[in-house]
Amino acid sequence: MRRIAAGLDVLTYISDYTRDRLAPVLGAVTRMAQLPPGVDVDCFTPDADGAAVRARYGLGTAPVVACVSRLVPRKGQDVLVAAWPRVLARHPDARLLLVGGGPLEDELRRAVAARGLARSVVLTGPVPPAGLPEHYAAGDVFAMPCRTRRGGLDVEGLGMVYLEAAACGRPVVAGTSGGAPETVQEGVTGHVVADPRSADAVAAVLTGLLDDPERARRMGAAGRAWVEQRWSWASIADTFAGLLDPDG
Image (cartoon, rainbow, N blue to C red; front, side, top):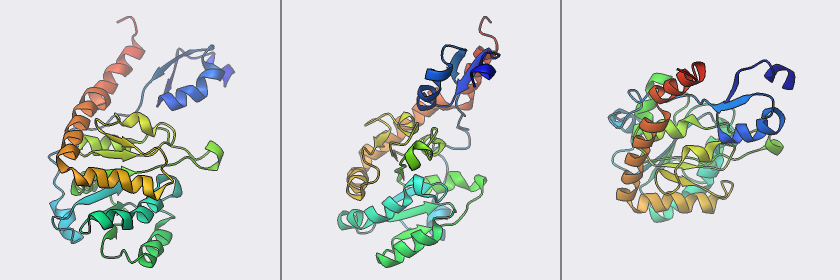
């Protein structure tokens, strides 16, 4: 890695988490600069309409917590299901919308059935990229309590779903894995759950947001503004242009 980096003008990283992993090895060899992916703020927008998704799954006007992600253990859908009875105890009409497919799907469906949650938890299966904005929009809160696994080998580099959800004007609930906390302004655009493995901790954050819809809406609006300013493709393109022509 040092030999390769010695021939580079700049090495880009996706998040401060990845920088911190690379810098001890490469920081003295080459310049490093953050260059994450961007969010299409014209596609992921508060104007996205989730009505068709709500109608498709019979969600009506219920408060909805949505998770858009591959169904794998790191993403935390299993903890959302485990937390859901605690959320229902306070918000009995709430619905949990798990969007995506993956190897954890069968296990999640069994857990939902075993807990008697079939009426309040929906697994959509895979959704094409063009359909994602309306699925974010179908939720009132976005949650993906990701956790690091396998001694740090299974980790979030950043977590674009949090930024896409924020661009759609939704408050976000993240876990602590890797760069995921960097996608949230704590208490402003959402919350990072300190213990994403804890169903009690996840439920407490979710119920807090469902308890106060106006606070949740303010967080969503703040998230949208932050994504436009910091994470849009226009902003990322400006950063990229600066890296290509630092003296321009």
